[in-house]
Image (tube, protein in one colour):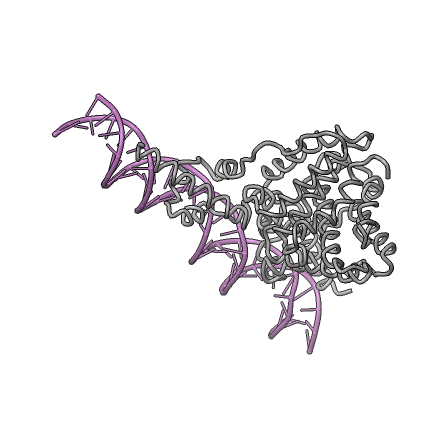
Length: 183
Length: 183
DNA sequence: AATTTCGTTCTACAGTCGTTGAATGAGTTG
DNA sequence: CAACTCATTCAACGACTGTAGAACGAAATT
């Protein structure tokens, strides 16, 4: 019931929310601590006081949960990947978009993407009975990243406002062929 | 034979080359005019004098040629797309990488990517006998962008140093299925 | 030879950035 | 009520940025 700690958690969360939004909208470099502070209706010094540095703020703002691929047979993995694709198309997972937006210019963000992809293809390549398994898994990651980027960030015509299910259906044969061994 | 105009074209080209390299390596925002000037062994003021502004320098540095897709039957288009993929994997087209590196944070670069994609799917959607043609063409663009980004910019493991032909063969079924109408 | 052109450099300005440390004032604790 | 904690603000520093304009000197023109 302590008003003090409650208030702190509140403003801290407000700062994090605005940071996520701005990082997702304009990327790491163009997002200024001053802009985050203004959006959160707070002094810039407070952001520093709570998070230490812009780098640490970015790290906190882009923390992600557990990898959503569980493994299984190639067909099961393909279905899980399609579900992952669908969810990445439907809502806008703002912390993911913050990382994606920054991955090409901010080394730390690129590293996070590589790590996430690594989590994926670990499970994927287990399921693919092929000596190209690692490569195929990496290609799948690249394809999923490309579609998410094309839709949410570059906003390619016809892709930005299409029905998610329709996109998933269009890509189903591709994902299935990529998670199989034969050509 | 005039020493003067020759010298100017020479240094201008040297500036453009270094600008392309730096834009490709670190993106628009992190590439400073001072850094370009230093790399080209020239004064920063000279870069301004020749190109007017950083924005115009970027435009000149990322000028591209004609769209490489010619159209035809779905199978022919698929083959052309695979050739495009192969060439984008083999050498590093540094002016393309400059645009790709900056597309997520620099609006102008994003616009250029949309325009290039537009050139593509114009030809692509003509060849696909389907009411989803536009969407399928956009998905193809996103896939190609994703693979190029994953290989050259994010440097995903196993994708960054794989044999281009191997990647092309892995993606052939996907591209073919995306340029067909039936599921 | 005198004058103009122009490739190139130097210096400086105004703005923005991340970051810091002191100051304030209300809430908590003894 | 006094002492203290701490969420928050204020003011400022040093570094870096894109950009402008004056100045110099060698090549081109007359």
